[in-house]
Length: 247
Image (cartoon, rainbow, N blue to C red):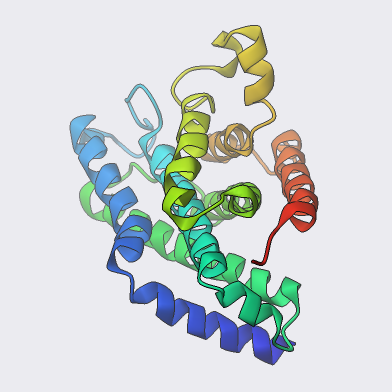
C-alpha cells in the first residue's frame, strides 16, 4: 500500500505542476499578497519585537490564504477527476480509497509547506524582523489549520455537482469564513448567531491557534483551538466518507 501511495503521490504532483494557474495560486499569490500588504503597512520599518502595526496580522492572513488556496485546488481536482471518470478508474485499481485520498491530502500539505517557506523567505528579504517568531511551531500551526480546512474541502468536493461550479462554490464557502475568523475583528464583536457559527469553523480556530503561537503561547495553552481543529477534521472526515461520490 505504501508503494502505491508514493507512486500515486508522484503522479499527482506532476499533474499538479502541469497546471500553471494552480501552481501560481498555491505558491505565488499568497506571497505576492503578503509583500503588497507588507509594503502597504510598512512592515519593513518594524523592529523585531514590535509585531505587525496593521489592522490585522499580515503574515497570518497570508498563511490562511495559503491554506484556502490548497483547499480550493483540492476541491477542483477532485471534481474534475470525478467528472472525467478518473476517480472511478482509480477506485478499480488495487489502491484503497484511503490511499487515494491520503495522497491528495499529502500533496496539498507539501505544497502548503513550500508556500510557507517562500513566505518566510520573502519576509526575511523584504521585512526583516517582521517574522521574528518561533517558525517551526508557527509552521506546525499552519499545517494543522490547513489539514482541518482540507477536511472541510473534502465535504465540499463530495457534494459539488460539476467541476465548473467547484471553485466558485468553494470560494463562496471559504472566503466568508476568513472574514468572520477573528483575524480582522474579534469574534465576540459579531452578532450572537454569527458568533456561534464562527466558533464552529476551522478558520476561526486556525486563526486563534496561529495568533497564540505568534504571540509566544505554548501549544498546551492553545489546547482548545488544537482540539477544535482536530474535532473538525474527524467530523468532516466522517461526513465525507458518507457522502463522497466516486462517480
